[in-house]
Length: 75
Image 1 (cartoon, rainbow, N blue to C red):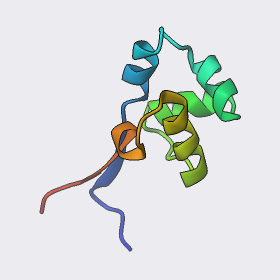
Image 2: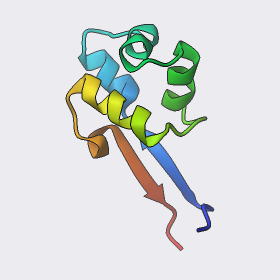
Image 3: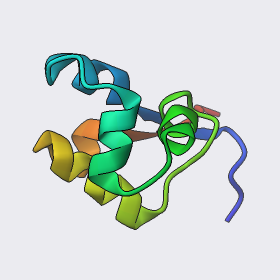
Image 4: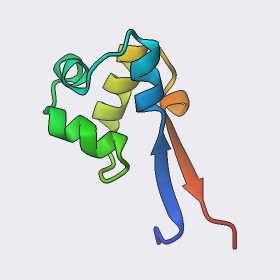
């Protein structure tokens, strides 16, 4: 399947803010990944595995689709 024109956006920064200004390190510790991984995911430079995505959503108590959105370009 071609991936051109598609991207994954996330609400991690917003959710961290809503959860008491949770740091990237705190989220990483909860999820079991490195802080650099959280930084890359949050910045849209890296797409997490499905397992990591579910773990992140679980930390925030949100459904997966509230944390991550798959965006396709029109056309």
